[in-house]
Every structure is written in structure tokens, then in C-alpha cells.
Amino acid sequence: MPDAPPSRGHLCGQLYATLRALEALGAAHRKLEDLRPNDKVRTSPLKWLPDMLRKAGEHLVRARGRGPAHGAAADELFRAIPDCLPPKGNLPGFLQDGEPDRFDEGYRLRMAAYTAAHGALLE
Image 1 (tube, one colour):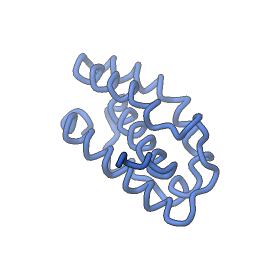
Image 2 (cartoon, one colour):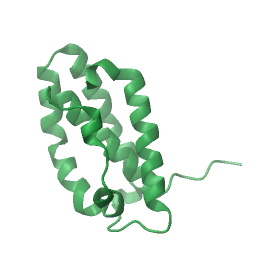
Image 3 (tube, rainbow, N blue to C red):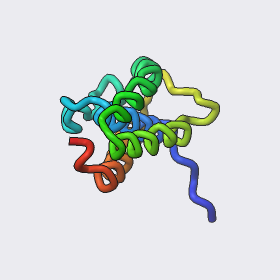
């Protein structure tokens, strides 16, 4: 039996982790612990994620400017963005009924993968 597709909350959590890790790669002064989701983004992704998406290119360019290792990691994260978007790119306006918990799960799993792959670069 095929796995069920990830929920919109889970995908939004993955997207948030990807965008925050990309931000950390591009900004020498950021720490991942400063980038954890708050209740506002967990419940209202449509209000917060579009602005973060618009800034992703800036973070990619800054990361590349920090050197080849940061640039390669940022390229990987930038390419992962489409896989984190909900179907048809429709970000939900409001998450409820357990979806904020799925957001947290998506965030935690994706950030753990990025930390395992690029931990030293994200600090």
C-alpha cells in the first residue's frame, strides 16, 4: 500500500525548515536555535512563508559568497523548495486540528536532515 502524501501542515513545516536553514547558510550571525518556528507561523503559514520565499534568492547568493561549501549546501536547499510546497503551491491560511503538530514534525525531520548533512555550516 503506498504511503499517504504528506499533509499540508507537514509540507509547510518542511518548507519553513528549508527556508530557515538557507537563511542560516547565508547569514554568518544566525544560529539555528534562533530560527525555530513560533506559534504564529505554525498556525498561519500563508501570512509568513511567502515573504520568506521571496527572500530565498538573497540567502542563496549570500551563502555562495561565504565560500564553496556554503554555496553547495545552499544550492541543495534552494532546489528542495519545490518539493516542500503543498499541492498546486497553495499555502494554507490557517492550520488547525492537529496540523500545527504535523508542521512541527515536518520541521523537525527536515531540520534534522539538514543538520546531519551540513551541521557545521549552519552554526
